[in-house]
Amino acid sequence: MGALTHASLVEYLLEEAFEVAETIETGADDAELRGELGDVLLQVVLHARLAEERGTFTFDDVARGLSAKMVRRNPHVFRADGTLQDSFPATVAEIVRKWDAVKTAERPERTGPFEGIPDALPALAKAQKFLDRAERSGFRQAQSPGQPGVEPVETSRQAQPPAAETATSEEELGDLLLAVVGSARAKGFDAERALRGAIRRQFASPS
Image 1: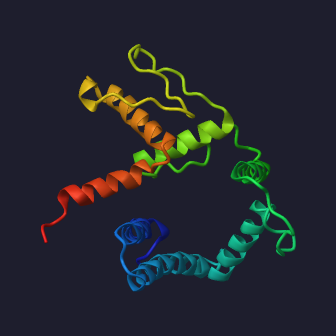
Image 2: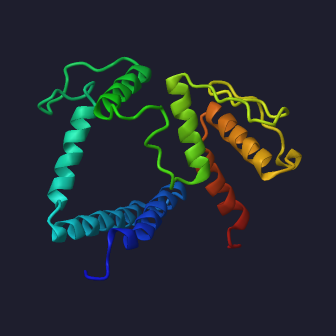
């Protein structure tokens, strides 16, 4: 495996993950989904194998770490010994609060609600993640400097965004795209998934 590195494998991990998403979103059968999930798992195995060759960690370490994290971050589901709790929170909001509290305790060095969001996320998905964190933390985005015509993004209720044709610069277009994501989120939509679906519909090969 001499030519392989963690960095050289990143593009394949991302590609395989998006292929899983496409398989699910296009309604492919279970056999295809099983194969695509196997391809993602192969990427995990390869990364673990590279680490094992350097003596840092193994695939078993990855699995044990994941199991411990799930128990630690879900005290509403698991006791500390990994057994199931006798009762569970009544609301999703309570579950989210418990999850956030555990993550905050794990990483006390993080000073803001947006730390830890990957820079490599696609822009629409990243925007939605920022809006999720903003609502949960009570953060309200400030109005863009020098953009008196652009309203601040509301994280709880979002008005219908203006058409992209009204943008006169990339900065304004960015504000409008963020408004679109906020509007989609307020309706329970996933903007990234919606755009992938629109591309498939608009550019699908004729049957």
